[in-house]
Length: 226
Image (tube, rainbow, N blue to C red; front, side, top):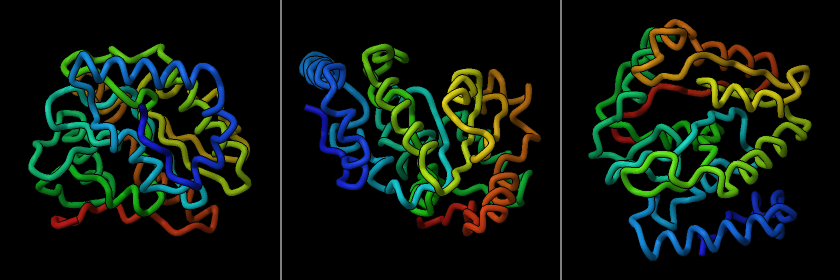
């Protein structure tokens, strides 16, 4: 079974979780856990929804797959828990954060500080086999997470959508850019960061959009002990 969704989001997604594809997805993930090491742990699959309730979400940061190496994925895109070295994409995110708004680079990669302020840190696919990137794609997760994007798009309160890389930018077609703000760039991966992520200033642009909305800005600096 897939762990329960937090109550607020469960109400928003109640129609989605009744659909046949979602039940098939549950069975798929359950069988995968019986045979393989699956990331993240069951209780962390919906961590992004747990830490950023629907009515508190101000920003959506979209990743693709969870991290697939041991001890990395814990349900928030790009984030790792304390004690786990920040992966290369996160290292580049920190470099841009420092360049953009002067934040110091923290000694860990735990981004829960952002999630608790209203940054929904969502992967498009929410589970993966250990050491097999992309192994749970096209099993139903994309339909489910598209429904999350569409729910935020339909909300009266505007949202800033951070879309990094070609995969994330494709989701722009689900978003009404007249009501919301889309900030897109290359992906922070070492393969593409120098082709448009570095210098894109997503953090200052996000806060400028939030000010325009009349919403509180995100405090992007990660506490050392946060």
